[in-house]
Image (tube, rainbow, N blue to C red; front, side):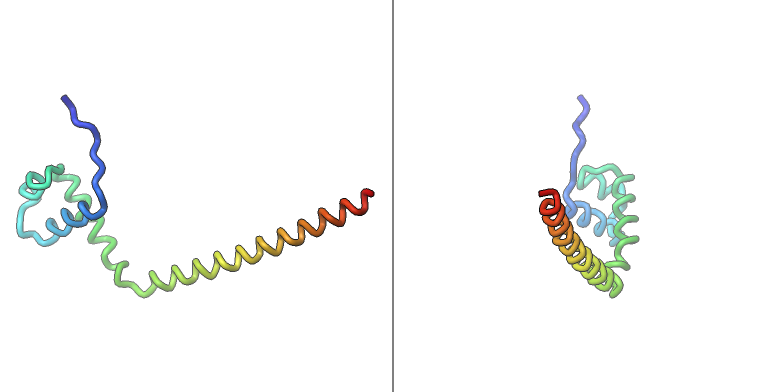
Amino acid sequence: MKKGRRNHTAEFKARVALEAIRGESTIAEIAARFEVHPNQITQWKKQALEEMPGMFSKKRGRKKKEQDELNDRLYREIGQLKVELDWLKKKHESLER
């Protein structure tokens, strides 16, 4: 009978990918030990190697700071627009009376 689809945690994937990057065992040996298909290990290894340079990049922190500043500015603008809308609604109601 066919097994259901398994979901692996990020920690598990990282551990398997790191094992593959080390190269102390073959992909087939790692696949047998962790009970994962060799193609999956190759994919996780490739993903880890592609994302690794970004982990040490200063731009990553700068981008987060820029995003936080943008979010703050947009929330302030939304708040200002809400105040203006409420004021206009109130003014419109008083003119209708």
